[in-house]
Image (cartoon, rainbow, N blue to C red):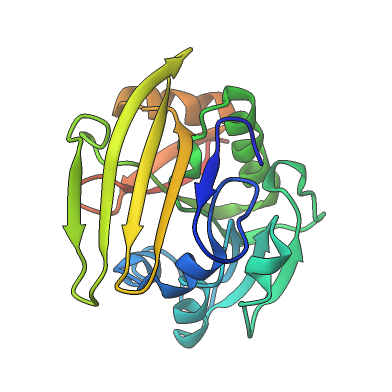
Amino acid sequence: MRAGHQATGPGAITPDGCAVELYSRLPVGTEPDVIASAVPAGAHILELGCGVGRVTHPLLERGFTVTAVDESPAMLERVSGARTICSPIEDLDLGEQFDVVMLGSFLVHAGDVEVRQALLRACVRHVAPAGCVLIQREGEDWHNDVPRERVDPSGFTVRIVSSEPAGDGAHSVHAEYEFPDATWTQTFLSRPLAREQFEEILTEAGLKVDRYLTDDRTWVRAVPAA
């Protein structure tokens, strides 16, 4: 388990505290539509942190080619139809470049600054000169509007119970997912990034914002700065 991360609940748990069975149950949101609207039809997408393929599978259905990367073999067992690679994102070096590199799941908010920098270096390493990097950010008040809960139409409740300072600018976030037949908890480190901070770290990594893809600016299209 990565430092600062822990989880409870049935089934396999990944090193960053993600429960495989939980993520297999979570419905896909608007992500595939947002992604499809920002990239060329039929693009080859490198999906970093694909999990069980919640977004992978809808992208395949839309005609994209996907190379799906995750550090958890148990997660990758749930992915079908895509080329899969088991590796920590920070260490990934395929010697290939892609039309699109995708860093979802708020991974850019990694609590460890060195990990975040390595994640962005992996994006830059693999994006084609004329390609783009799609990054998912936390909402502007994500750490302030706590506690909060949302009842999903499919019948489960997700709660962000707390977000407490954990030192050096990172927060320890505790979440709960309650289903009729099972409950999972997850605690993880997250580093809040205001818009200006986010754009600054992209510049440091050799990227620049092309445009924000959603009104709440949680999805971003970035391109190589050169």
